[in-house]
Image 1: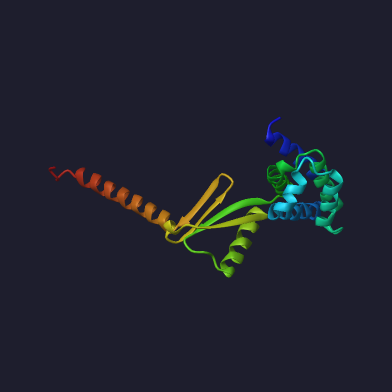
Image 2 (image 1 turned 135 degrees about the vertical axis):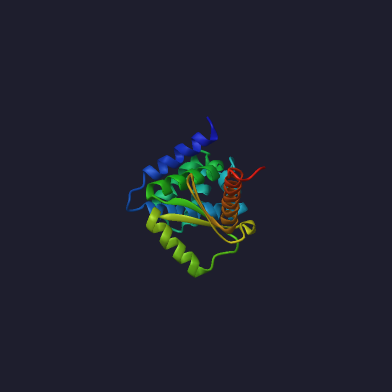
Amino acid sequence: MNDKIIARRYAASFIESTSEYNIDESYGDFQAFVKAYYESEEVRYILSHPEISFLKKLDLITKLFKDKGHRLARNFICVLVKRQRINYLKKIEKEVRALYRKKKGIRDIVVKSAVPLNEKERIRLRALLEQKFGLLDINEEVDESIIGGLIISFEDQVLDESIQYRLKKLKELMTKIDNEWLAELIDQPGLAI
């Protein structure tokens, strides 16, 4: 079976088993586990090694969650370990994240600017964009080639308010005006060109 299909099935199972009351807590606990898993080579070794007993792995998972995590996330990790799917964690995490964001109505927006936004600009921009689009995950990128202004990418739309784009449009307008003026000049009856 395809890795992506496996990841999607496990992720869907995890998200479908949450309710609107515990989805944030379960998702947060799952993300905390993923972070701990990738930060510790020892954790990765123990949980993915086929010869280490499931009971030892279960003990490690319990210690990682420290009885504070939501049982749904803990049980989900146990299922992944027991079924030897922990090696798919990166792909499963990606699918869980996508399904969580879809369920919560969170959309991705990329904001490119010539220099990093300051906190005041960031807050104002977030307020304006969330008023128009709803819950957002705004990813900022610095691209010095745009000179100034912003380029905002949202799903399949791009709002280009960069100085570079405005200069390009101004150049196109000036070329159009020059061409129209030249055409009018040529069309004058007294002009012999």
